[in-house]
Structure formats: structure tokens, C-alpha cells
Length: 88
Image 1 (cartoon, helix red, strand yellow):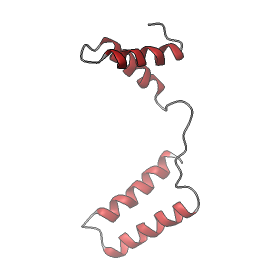
Image 2: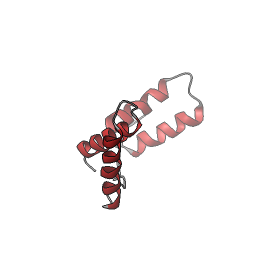
Image 3: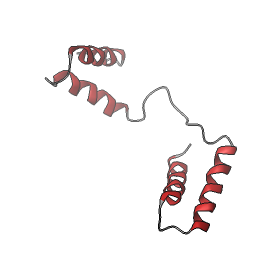
Image 4: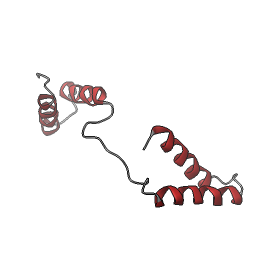
């Protein structure tokens, strides 16, 4: 699913829950979402790696230097970093 498609569907979902949107528009949004889901496009596509891999790596590095994080979480972060070829 493209980012634009996500935005369109998200807009329709927001319209359904917005009190200032006319009922006719809400019905249209419900129809668009139903058609989208019927076409099998409602399934979320996932990749093996996270979209923002650099952010994930940075978060794990930050975990290691945060004194408020437990040892178990730090060990998990070490493992993830090593799996991604980063020496800790």
C-alpha cells in the first residue's frame, strides 16, 4: 500500500468520525473504505526490515547509554545492533 493510499484511506476514516461532515459524505467514505477492503488492499504490506532502519539503530544505541533502561532491554539492543553489523 502506498503512502498516498494510506493518506486517502486515513482521510476517509477521519471524515466518518468528524461531526461536522455531512452524513452523505460519511456514507461515501464508508463506501470507499469498503471497496478498498473488498479488493484485498486492506492488508498491510510489511517488509523484512523497518522503514526507518537508521532510526531503529539509533534508538538501540540510545538504549545502551540510557541509565534508566534495564539490563534485559540493553542486552536486546546489543543483540539487534550486532545482528545489523554494528560493534558495541
